[in-house]
Amino acid sequence: MQSSLIIALTGVTASGFTLCGQPPEPPLPALKNFLKYNISQETFKIGRSDVCDVVINESASIKGGTISKVHCMLKKGPHGTHFIVDLSKNGTFVNGKLVGKDQMILIKDNDTIAVGKQQWNIYMFNLICGEELPDTLTSSDSSLSLTPRDVLPIWGRLHSCILHLRSFDLCHPTFKVGRSSCCDAIIDQMDIDPKIKNMFSKEQFIIVKDADNPLTYIVDISSTGTYLNGQLIGKNCKNILQCDDRISVGKRKKRVFVYKPMYSSESHSLPVELRAKYVPCKFLGKGACGEVRLALEKRTCRPYAIKNILKGRSTLSQIHELNHPLKIETEINILRALSHPFVVQMEEIVETEDEVFIVLEYMRGGDLSNRILSNVPLTESNVKYMFYQMVLAVEYLHSRGITHRDLKPENILLSSDEPETLVKISDFGLSKVADEDTMMKTICATWPPEVLSPNIQVYDEQVDVWSLGVIVFYMLSKKLPFRSSEPKVMIQLVIQGAYKMEEADWQGVSYEARDLVKRMLTVNPQTRITIDEILKHPWLAKDIPMLYRVQSLLDGEGNQENVTVNFDAEPPTKRVKISDEFTD
Image (tube, rainbow, N blue to C red; front, side, top):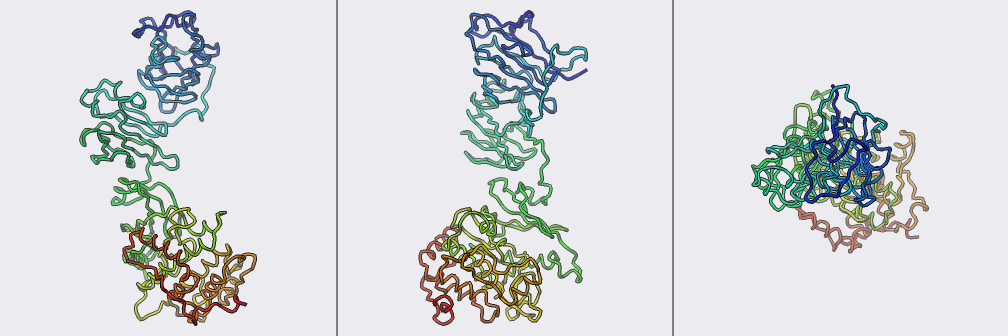
């Protein structure tokens, strides 16, 4: 026995496969003496040409050109499925709906196909898919083969929960359900309880497959309400659709479909508490101690970044490791204590025996490093706008007794691709809360001279000022101040503060900007400009329009900490005087 597709050709004679007669009104029922074809080959063509498997000769009473030479083609798909491809000029219809030129849709048990005219049943084919036939019954013509690129894979299925309501395989990017004839699942054509049928709107909901990731959405477009697992989605709102999700219409408990995906979800990588709320959809990055993934909140489809950290051993010998439980606990405590418009916000934390999962707000614009390296020009005004936000964020951290210690372009995140955008500091994996009367003595892999020099064992929050100086140098010139392929040489350059502002890279940059960079990259942390002094430097303090734009940004972010921009700050005449190097 072999699984095959049987076609019942309504109104076809045994000799010549000729369809004849004027299109009847009303449509005629299927003739008793129809011809059956066992389609054992991969494709099966229908049309006027002799190359087709079924040749339809139009009679004189039918207007010429109604049937194309090759009108449509039936194809075998994976998992026992079958598809129809419209190759015609005048249209191929499945259950009264136009397939569309060169488009392919799934066909199922008892679907009806019309070639040429939607209403002419004399041209219709009744399909009975997957019927078992004896091995001896084969097609007399099998000349074509299926190529893999022609098959649309099934990525999901809507399982019916209502008597006589069909189940549907999902293979196209969108699938619309409703009573209208423009829908993919036309409820009015189904023999279901009229009361249930009336619960559907003309257009009830759309299932959407995301092209960039394995996520599937359901969009409520109804006037009667679409519910997912008992929760109203809301008109023109969308929810993420997952395995075994229950879809109801009209009423919360009137379940009509259950969704089943064909792919495996990555949600199992999350703990149960997060799995119920978020769906991971994209890999963002990986480090020695864990990884970061983009995830969407199921109810709102709002994006978040979920960072998971593998816990290290809690022994004293492993205390220097970044993933030591005590260091992870420190980072968690820091994140819980922070709330500032220019610092990445933590939403929630879930801890398991082996891992810690931190849910953070997601910044769509990527990191500052990519912005600097892109072909999009960064004007001095753009640089100042973003840099000022960074300084306000660091000022906030220092006021809380927190030194970041790992400030770099990769840890500065942008809200959008716009030239002027919201900027937030992230990644506090190396941050440490300093005691009120103590300095930090731990060694960390950052670039300030006091950290790299073997002669200096104590350093303070001034390390962040140096790091900000490196960042703004990079933003203004698109080159790092200290460059060498040899690590030892690089360290010596940093310790000595040996950098150059080459005129080719700094052409057009203001004297004030150069002076501020010079003061930030001062080797001695005691004479290095402080965060408070940076805010009073004329490059920032005198640019009132920029200060107002940042203040507007703060107001738009809710500004929970009541951060304000000082519009009246005058630059100190001694500490922040423009260097003679730039005034000669």
